Figure 1 (cartoon, each protein chain N blue to C red):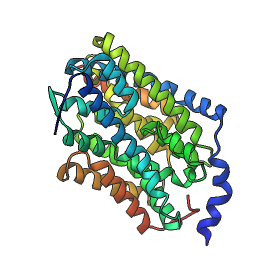
Figure 2: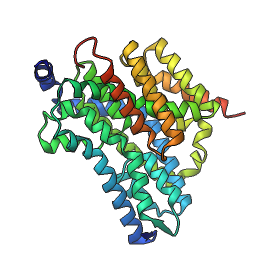
Figure 3: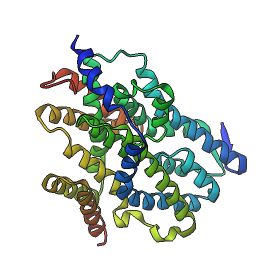
Figure 4: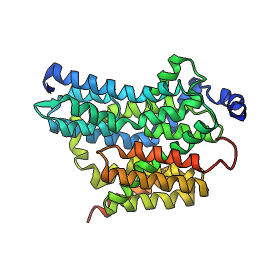
Length: 244
Length: 102
């Protein structure tokens, strides 16, 4: 019974978003987007070095908008690419989006289908994490998901373009610590999130499962495996407070 | 099946990548539309959302170089103290960059 009660009343308001909220979300991600430009530039440069045509690299960033899988595609780049390997690789790396969509569903299902799938077009790690954080604080989150996603997408494409034409500036992004941008950002989300014994248990299970999968299971499976294990851990330890 | 990376071949590869990625962005939402959101499902989803982040970060910390580890440590400590993400991210990247100069 209480499953219905604790969703309907507050979620109905939380799922609303308008132009102002989207613009707010855009602005919230702008500081991070400067790092995204640098990362995009690293991709543009790597693509150019792999022999990908400049316009095609920009097309890839525009249409795919998923950095890690784009870098992975470059690793496969040769005169001919095995299609099956490419599809499996891209799917495995991006499979975490499946989980993101699922975690947003309690709020997404209030939206009409066009908006529901529309906002997911630009879902990626950073803006998803921020929108989940907003929802957990009882604030509307889809402005951040859509606006923040548009910011990340825009700067990712700009960065790619810069990398193709002025790439040598960031020839070695690791040396400047730029490969750690997303990791550090996501870590701030974890640390700023809910902290209690139950969450510590869930995180430990997720971390151990992820590490085991990283070592013993097929490549790129660790995020989904770890997240799923963490979800199951959450089921074994009941809620202390309200259902969110 | 092999696809050539020339002209239309490249475009085909990009379109395939785009479609596969779109399937991942939409698939989770689509599957959830068949699952009634009860208490247990919410509990699972809630636990899973933090776990996604932890599952991304754990191998980064364990298998990364010292620069990566120091960056994450610095970020964690800074955000705990300051409560603000941006200075923490900046501090983490700075530490990674500094530690990799030598």
